[in-house]
Length: 413
Image 1 (cartoon, one colour):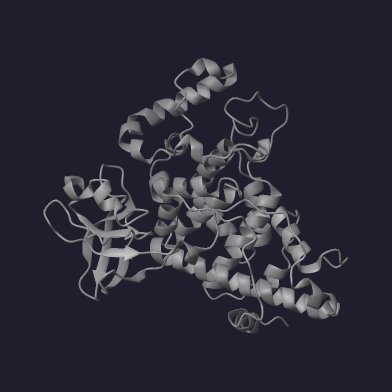
Image 2: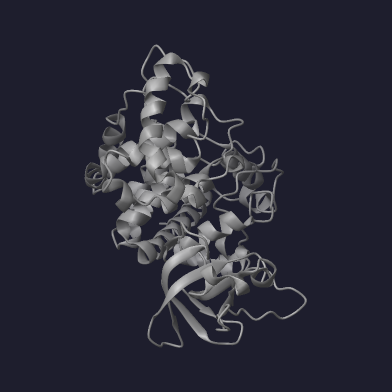
């Protein structure tokens, strides 16, 4: 029987070590903001002057000029909630260098969050000379959720001791590690639910899963900036809102599209343009999308369409995510359909002769393993037995890297 708690104790005492599989790179401001909004940094902090800061409500992505997040609320030293906006910068001095202190749009800021500290001490003040609490966060605390670059693997230091262990002992160790990982995923999802509510948290995580490893960040941002509540209340515009905010409707000339695509794009644009000005600040930059190396079936435009269809069938999705989720969720996704995207890879591609699934079986398996079962575990349900029964239809570079580090050329890999 695997023992995740024992594994956690060994890991904490460094008798078991886990190292990040991915090439490290500095996180950009947009990614850090997305992680902050998702609650991955936590909700309780100590300010630069020692005050206890609790984020009561993280707010929403701000559409207007001013701080990054509006309609937020914090509590200082267990006092009454203070409502206003939150600004997130890479450095503490950005408040001054970006001119926030002289900009009236920042007058309602209640918290300034930053990552790096400059050589000089900076105080965050508004144009009305009100001091704004400052909090520093550490990107190392949130892991590598949006990383996608895996280096070539070499056998690691665990390979030698594992080589001499009997197969049942190795299986027990790996299952303990898997159970520990399930608990970690459950804890993370629990924090996200606490910050945004169950439905919004589910929607953000499903969107991230549809982004695959290359586009997890832009899909997360898309679900944060056009939340489920807005989409469910705008049934005729949900697809246009998602495509427009994704930046996929910025091509002004309809002549670039195939004849059977023009009518579809024209309808999207006509539904999008009344919202475009107010949503301008939230439109994702084109450079954030990773299109190279993406299989045509997994193109982000197809997945944005799938996200829109999912939002329109949210009640059925929740029902399929219950106790018999493994089979019910598979059937739910198999039943999703779209008259245009069942036959197109992208907005610029020619129509396919045969229909294609909006979301394939391997992606459903990933959603089960990394979202539905961990969420159930965070709610106190015992899903370990069903979790072990999940199929792993595809390998990937992460799995191959781990297998090589742990087992080298051992056939048990």
